[in-house]
Amino acid sequence: MDTNDSLRVASLWHSMHAISQQLSPTTGCSGIELLEADTFDLHCFQSLTGTKFFVVCEPGTQHMESLLKVIYELYTDYVLKNPFYEMEMPIRCELFDINLSQAVQKDRVAMLGR
Amino acid sequence: MIGVGKIKQYSNVLDKPLSKGKQEVSLSAFAFLFSELVQYNQTQVDNIAELERRLEDAGYAVGARVLELLCHRDKGNRRETRLLGILSFVHSTVWKVLFGKVADSLEKGTEHEDEYMISEKELLVNRFISIPKDMGTFNCGAFVAGIVRGVLDSAGFPAVVTAHFVPVEGQQRPRTTILIKFAEEVLTSFSLIVTLFL
Image (cartoon, rainbow over all chains, first blue to last red; front, side, top):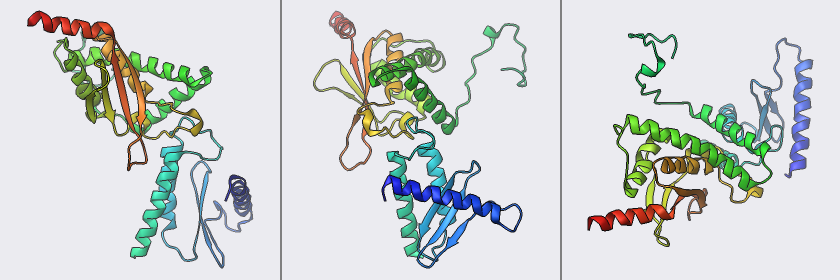
């Protein structure tokens, strides 16, 4: 998935998230947290600043919320503390990529063990 | 320090004893501050060499002050006169105070007589920084190189200090080496002292 495609998907998700917040019949709704489809699940985590992290996984995968929180921590560490990262730009930080793949790998291994 | 429960009131702030200071500072706070320092300097310069020089100058100021403070606190106002003495001082004491641990290694250069190297697996200042590909060999460790240069210069051992990335096999991230090249007069005076005693 190249940069343009991921930008398109991300903007699509951002709009859907915002619309769902308005459409919700319950008050105080903060947007979509989980989207379940036939072939995939989409978990979304929204930080206090409104930045959204979403992960697309196989249906029925457990513990995605904790993974999203770990990813949020990695984001604050390796992206926000990087002086060469400009806000709102696609993330091109080597350390972030390395640690992200490590976190996903660890999660995968942990899940196979259960 | 205003408002902290004082036992003795000092009329002159210069009479107050130097405190040991807080031993620990938040790493995140420092990381954000350092990131801002780099970003600010990036807006002021046109090229990478200039950016490195600015970071080094910032470190130089820190180094000069750190030497004064440590000489007073840890060494009882004695000053180092030997080359190896000042190098091991930088390698252990300065590193311990600034980064919480001693440097990984101190080596003498094989090619030239006046070169020494302090290596570190990963400098604390570089911990959260990923250099973009188009910046080439730029290293934010220039700040630490500046600190070392400040300490050496103020101690009377003028040197040219630079920070380099050295790729290591089997490791994704390269290790960082601070290369210290002493000026001519340091080595001649050193050998002069040795010959005088012989």
